[in-house]
Image (cartoon, rainbow, N blue to C red):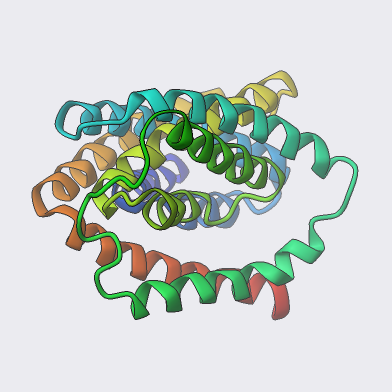
Length: 252
């Protein structure tokens, strides 16, 4: 019975994650609720082992339909990979409690800015070319990748917002780009969890299969309905993140 519950949660998480990120809002609580006595690291590792496949398939689907700016995104993905390792290393040295309390307010600012700027991310008009775009994209990858390794919640939303705000991408192209960044940062975390033995491989396979099903459906909807649809889902996911992180920081 447990594998059915978490597999369905993985499918829904893959669906949401493919559109705008935030699939962990669904699968991680489902794993913790289903296996309340399991070590947290094992549940987080198992979550990564399933979710990374949906992210990979979503990245591939987007790359076939969206004109990806590979010259900037590939170096940025490398920076995200490095940043994730640095963040994971930093969390072994210092507490992330200050970030836990700060995060809801950062997300509120991000949401208010998106709501105030009605045309933000509706048209795809990259602001930079060449080395300047690569530099900014790498800075985004390194910074948000480090955050992902150190703490994590809202990583996809931060990637999307920064690609829209700093590079001039629309929400659809920003979401496609964010998938590649998430794939890189999640890969480093997955290697770390695997080396430490914090993955239930017998759950990883069904979680991966169902996550891919949800991811295919979510990517199809995003490509079909475009930037405006992705923007609406982005607002909903960030709102949910504010509630979840605010509860975790101040009420739990």
